[in-house]
Image (cartoon, rainbow, N blue to C red; front, top):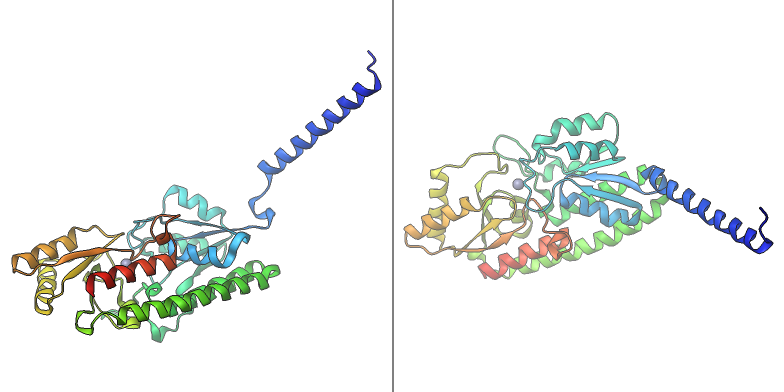
Length: 312
Ligand SMILES: [Zn+2]
């Protein structure tokens, strides 16, 4: 069978299009994710993932294991997390035992790929320690300390991808500038609360660095780890403090059940002192992605604005 030249050329053209489409479809499904020049990163908490996103930009694809409302002290890796950790080229976590139940798996991953605790470069002298010498892991609440974490992420991204050094350096510098502004904002806002009312009462001791950096007394019902128990006497002590100091607001945390703080409010009411819940703070997890509180800067601003409007 013979076709006129025009139709033959049309068939040839169609064949070419089909062949190209097939090649590009295969390319998409078969490509190794790391071969498109994008680094696959897994981060534990949202705060750590946010640094990677800011410094890495579109050169990095970051997955955070712990979403909004998740308590990192109690979090255990799921089967899905194991697959993500296996596929990652680079893993970042907070460290200082924040992710206490993930120690083993992170150590195991560390034998085959870079696994970086972002708090590792913080001067040990600047860490807060409990009476038994445990470091307080909540370093992100001192913005100056968190800048050190940004520098650590920057240096490890450069190590993994030296060709884009200048890009990572520029992005990190811009972000650090934003954090310097944030640090000034927090200092100014907290200073606007009269000194005797500057007491922050929360469910667990997540705000030790915040208190030290921005000059506000902090009291938590539970210690620095939510895995620790608290008893009736702890509630009573806190109630006494609230009553004596005439503190008018306490705060719940997005990643800790609110019943502990509600017990304190009830206890104070029984002694004739009215305490209100001043709002919800983001302590150990960011808010929902796509909202202002879904970023580190937005989380800190939300907390500060909430604290100031309840205590001022
Ligand atoms: Zn905590």
